[in-house]
Length: 326
Ligand code: DAS
Image (cartoon, rainbow, N blue to C red; front, side):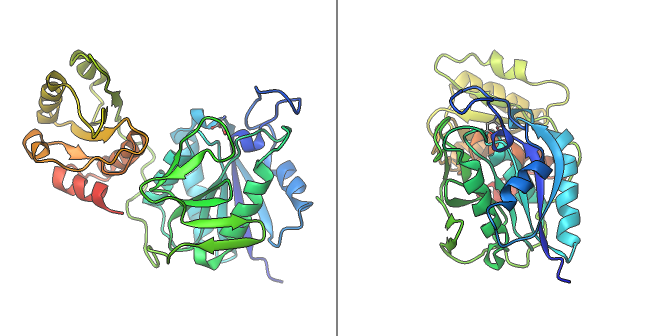
């Protein structure tokens, strides 16, 4: 008997959320467990054998190492299991981009790993979760999804982990990619890829660590006082992400305070608080000892820096190379 299957790892989120009424705006995420969810999905008649496992039942605003560690271990095990063709992770949309990048940096690209969520709870009028889930099954079951790293499926579109971001608080088209937009279009019955896989045969880029170093984000604004930066940094802080204005800019007193922190061993990365903010390296970065985040937004720059630091990478040039990589 062919026991090839897709593993579905559930973490909660709006895709498993319930409002108690089809018209209510407020709701509770993570209310439907994966066994019940998969029995509803069974009625769609999807061409796939789905095996479910509950990892957590949280809103993704609470996502942290307590969920990431068992999630990563379960995916790793599934990637080693010849009977498992791919993995789907149901996830809240608020921090899906962070989990996607963290997994992308630390997992091999041999089989499809797909995150999926919903913008409306399961009992809402126009629930988008079932369609997104059916789309995720199509993507995770497609051999052409391998070699593209971790993917996020939302609103009939497929995004790569490095590009994806939640860009709107409401609406079923809340996700977009930057600098590259969707890399595929999907419906429950069709899948079109734009371009070829780019990570074919690649192993994990970085080793997994159960505990990641402390890296706060400093959100820059007009009239900012340099003390805000020093107050943010504690004895455990190893790096700092600056969500700068425009192209990662900041007031000069703040820059000087960050240079002192840098000299004390804290890695400083300049990103932008703009939604589509490309921050390139500038000559002053050499003098300051800063890193430019390129196309990563502050929350994703934080994940990359945490993974690099956990892997013992401290050298600014080496860190810059990891930020430059597509
Ligand atoms: N409750 C939020 C979350 O879990 C929103 C969502 O899932 O869409 O991220």
